[in-house]
Length: 153
Image (cartoon, rainbow, N blue to C red):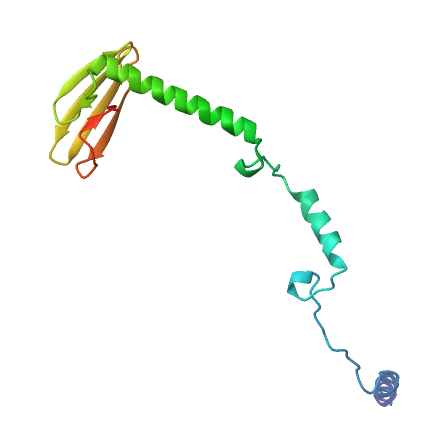
């Protein structure tokens, strides 16, 4: 009898719990709305997003060539032209009006630098060596490069 009462009591609790539970579960649709106005979000979010992005930006805006002062550009161009003309004059004085003949093997010494010009079948190899430190750099000019003389007028 005790077992019957326990079973009856357990069944009663289970039935009352079922009565208390809702009969139907309600749900809502999930709708995604983008935040960014560029992807269909509200245009009101634009200034907030821009300010947030600028505050996180770790790069500083540097001046580009377009925003430079025209007077500074003129001065820089003038300096380049004067240095170029001076270089032509020095090479012309040192090697004559023909400049350096790249079709012949030759060696030149300028202060602490030794320059070797070595023509070959693939082009001209120019080796620049620092006499004091022993460092060297080689520049190769392909044989299809126009001009045989360097530094002429």
